[in-house]
Image (cartoon, rainbow, N blue to C red):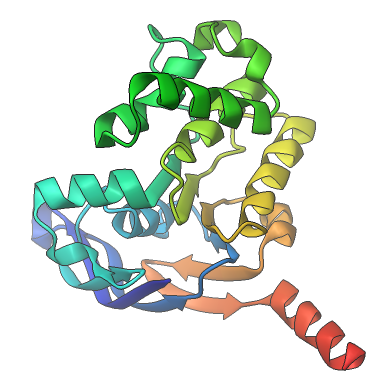
Length: 238
């Protein structure tokens, strides 16, 4: 699903700039919940921004489902991102002057996926799936943090993307609400989505099929604990 070959990212600054990622080699399969972990400043957010096409690498190649993301021009990249990637932010990023259902409709409007009536029907369906259909016509400010994050998940699913990226999606939530959001994200892999989540909370990685650890802009570890458990069970059953 995701391939990074020799990827580096240098941000401009004094003395040659700041190297956020350094020669990253990574191959991530489809249909898994992948956790990106590491200390603050290790390059986690930069990595998923590159995967999602929000930012561009300074060097190297990035392919997502066969598409050379780094080679797309700006207009093609925006269209690809709108149709292929759903993004869940730590601070929700819902537009405050639009209702919840209108926020979920935005990606469909941007990409011209559906006509307005059909887009509203799909948005309401998605809000029902995340358990907040009754909040559809309210402004985001009237919702709790957990409800806003659920709305953000619904918005990320608007165009039925193959890839969901989430940057610290539980960082502003209480433990109970955080677990509910993580369960929502986990359920997406059961329907074939690939979920890549950045987190600094190690205890949340129990939800992940695969864990990628970064330090100083480099991949220093990769493990697939849940995949190993599944394989062991399948071998035992056989």
